[in-house]
Image (tube, rainbow, N blue to C red; front, side, top):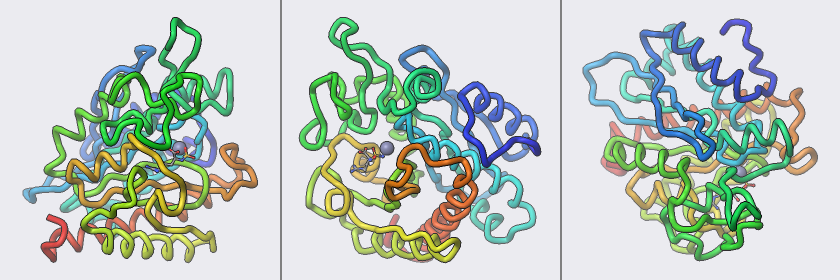
Length: 314
Ligand code: 0X9
Ligand code: ZN
């Protein structure tokens, strides 16, 4: 674990091995949990980081790599896990968070697609499910959740990049995530889903101009996170509701999570702003992860405060 290069992109086999090493080295705080199998029958695992405590804890969910080609996202999930584990004993900020929060981290949601982006097509986005008698492949897993499914910003044509699947939650990967989140939703305070690119912090919704009931605090927490991010290396992010500052989407995990009652739900679109796009050079991994870490910690500090010291998000 000490020698694992966090400033490199890793193929899926190495990420599986990394999860095993992390679990073995940090047995007292990390457990690995099976979520389900992918379409191509690979196991999905998330890492749970939890300090034994008598407090009733809230859950922070973070997934990375729902889109295969966005390699910086899994790199950030791994970076985040390392930062938490290397610092939780000495760093009072992280120690405080872990007293009342458990972190659930899914480093690669779309494993089949991620592997395909390494072996065959660097710019692959979707999953690898087969459709129309094997004439087209892949569902956009971020259009397959059960929220206003395939109503806008998604396609029913399996050849399209935003193919929404054959029905809501038709894909094994979205089933696995949905059922875990559904079963824990009363305890989940914050849902973070990490993408690239565009340098955005997006909040619900993508499928409607309506605003969530806590829109004001979502904007405020998001803007503070963007300020913290910029303070690290000067990178500019925009913050806003998805449909306003990006484009319309239906069936996204973030909107679904908000609509089942998870108060703080955000999509991050990491670096860059289009120069390299999805093919962000490895030389930028470290700075991207450092600044994103500041933004995520800012959100976690805020949701921690808001949950335990006010009634606004209960
Ligand atoms: O299109 C997407 O799913 C995301 N952009 S990406 O370039 N990473 O593919 C945007 C997701 C934002 N979420 C919603 N608009 N619901
Ligand atoms: Zn994406």
